[in-house]
Length: 381
Image 1 (cartoon, helix red, strand yellow):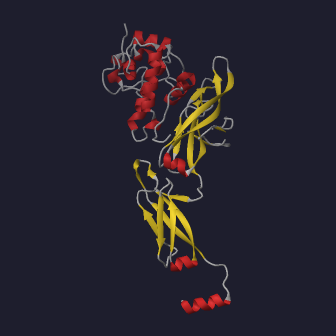
Image 2 (image 1 turned 45 degrees about the vertical axis):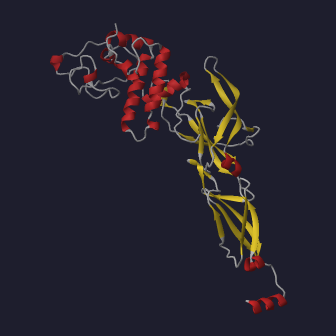
Image 3 (image 1 turned 180 degrees about the horizontal axis):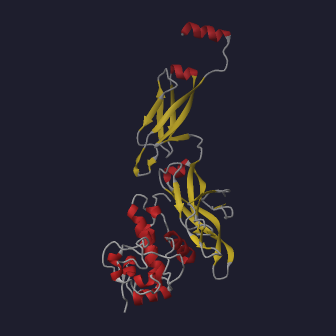
């Protein structure tokens, strides 16, 4: 019979759960409470620690068996008998250790609500030293390396390859190949044992950013770009590396702005700490006729000096093919603008709404004038 169920409760599973169920429950809970996804919730870090430490014990058959038979307090003491209550609680525990779970109130035989457990630095269970929990980030990193990499930390509304990737070949309807990479390391959390039995830091999974050139028409209409990438994979069973081709469908929302990030998790090279993430950064290609100003689209028409002074008329086509008749009876200032509401770019958060279509002018001045022309202009002006 299971002595206590606290660790099972932390993961939301029953004491009869199999290893696959334990892994799934931990993956779900760790992703929910991971500090990177809960920067504004200080309590999440403690929850992440609790579920990670619960997983560390329950995922180890021997430790789980000991826990089921004797409880967590027995495991933490390394199998030593409980401290003598008459000794005032000063025996093997100094109140400085167990931070992952609530204090004594939640443990069998805990009594009050303030007692915590002191861990030795020794590894494993059993023995006078007791069990020593690993760093929660280390537990999570080991989980990813061990096959839990299907988890994703995707958190943004918007969805570039990797340091070890081969070139990205263009696909029909896609974009030309890209080279180079910009790595933004998430830090040096996570760990593994060195030769002395201590835990040495290892790099976390990197985020690799790539520019994604997109035309103004694609940003106006919305589209999906198909990208072919090459990624390195690692077979833990054989210890061999191989290269895989993968097709990514990159969604371009209507009205998406330059600088927006389109994020893919766990699609890159398998490296120390897990699988690389890929972030595409949208870059707007130059357009021969239009420029974008926020949600507005602007076009410039050329008029000569005579037209600027005496008047002009033009037919201008919008980005979606509408014909607009514009003109001025003159004189026309170099700062002239004519605005047409709701004919500009779709607004990314409100795609049924659009900005303005703006028409400006560029006055072409003559490069030279004859003496007669100068005298005539002096007489007129």
